[in-house]
Image (cartoon, rainbow, N blue to C red; front, side, top):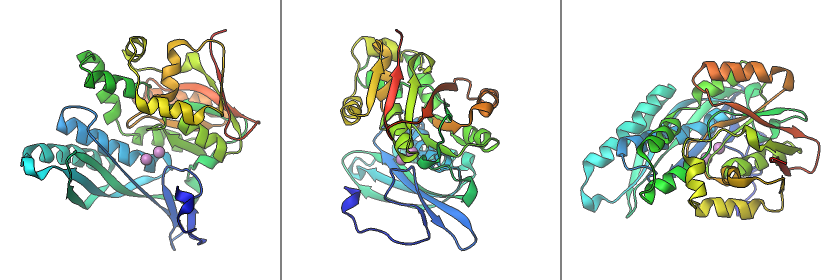
Length: 322
Ligand code: CO
Ligand code: CO
């Protein structure tokens, strides 16, 4: 649909509408890159403060995925004001404000419209030295792929809505969704990471497809290396699926080949994540060191989950148990 909008032509656009990237990037006169992104969605958990934190962490994530540091943020709010539940709205905004402060960005304002369904998120601006950007096109042949958070948040929040999720599973999913990708991005910045994305609504394979296509390479995923949230496979086994996962699977059908029997873990490949981890492309000799750095800085579930290799751009081969 974006292709029907008027083409934006300017040498100042470093990343624009043409690539399905995490954020738009504009070259400032100073030579620094301005990163801009916007994201907002309906509540994924019951507690308004948790929801505000998760939505803000998710919105800030696209700046980290692009190699930048967030500098300013604006609130975007849809709220049914006729309910007059100002305490709930206040909790949501306080949760968001806490994550904005943790990121080091400054909240400059926002906008609220009346809507039947609550929605919250941020528009975030970030900065990065031009040569430190990590767009989807930055992967190289032979790069290993590191994922920094466990998968399965979509399955768990769906089980929660059905009243079928155990409290400890929800708490662990919420803890991960709240976690900023700032630490993972800082670890990546110490190494030669040139390509990255964050895993959100299109699931692991959807976002990997964009990286592989942007880098003009194929990708390989090692199913037994995928980190999963506790409980995710259990709920997948009892039939918890999401419409989003099914849409992701259908969209990717022609690009994905699964070797062997994927079993339950197939659900992790397409599960839509909220505030998921970073997917980092890293030269092979540095991969183990980056993995250690990530594990030492609170990303203990980080895992090398596959690689980029020569082949049809955007195609993905998933290797399951034989
Ligand atoms: Co993104
Ligand atoms: Co986004």
